[in-house]
Length: 403
Image (cartoon, rainbow, N blue to C red; front, side, top):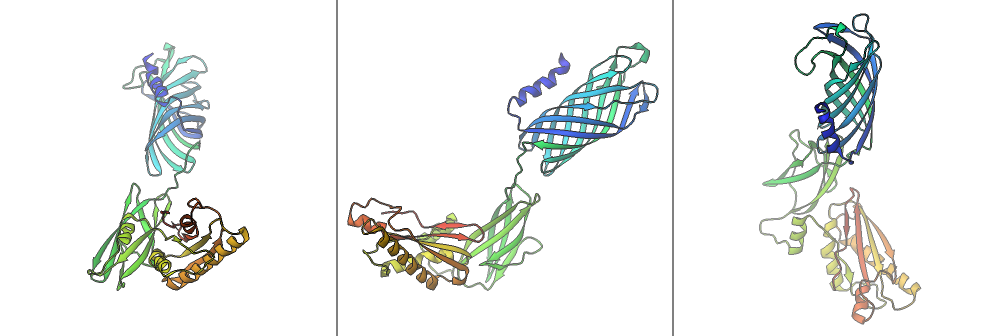
């Protein structure tokens, strides 16, 4: 009963939450049987097996079993089958892993019936997506009821004799989730005179920076992984880096960079956005009825808000809305004209107009922000909102609406 304790413990640990199922085929180029210090090689053999495993961080553990073809000896020990049932534990190092097996094997002989024997194996494996390749050395205890075979005691786990194999296996794994998440990258800036040097840190995964861009212009990466720029005027920049880990997963990250003189002033809003890494575009509200031109206050709000587009490449959507007064046709036309007017001004005030593709949209009397139950509320619903999508995938929307 004690011999089956390890299998029982593994069954209890897996419970009903196994997440991977694999089927493997194997070739045994080496098979050898040793009894009473006498060894006899056998023919090459084949195997077919399966495993049910669960994954926790770098550990994989579960149960497995194999069916092996007959082991053919030339003379001394006859021919027999050995079919292991085992618990397996694997530990992953990036794409390769080490494994251990421990269990029992059912051994049958053509002439006599043998008892089951202990089984153990050690090996190395490598994963290729859903395909695993493994090399395993295993040993199975031979225990026999027939005294004619004169099986005598040998040390350690295998008391009577042993059947040893070296196997090469290929397995297909069902239910495996392939992790394509890119590495997390953090950037550190160091300023010396008019030169800015960036170094990077990567969490959890080994990775390296392969490409860097400053306002869309490529910056070469040095051999030590740093990259730098000199003679930059004060202003706002967009720094984009591309990081690749050992598995080939890619991260593209864009960070805002603000270069200021020691005595220059930066607004509270700009500072909060820079520290938090969050940026937003303005929302333009307060149009008078049937008016498409911007007031001086609205123009200032627009000029102060579109700076977040500096150094970026992408598409800017300018979306106009109205209140519920007037006909649907008039309001749709009015919202389009307001969006077009704002788009023309954006082209004039943004620092990189050639990098920004502007699309205007009129949505008329839809998507009200507040109820149209007063003149003041209707004025708030007559508005322009923005949404910017950069070529690198960053999305910047209008700030949250507040009355």
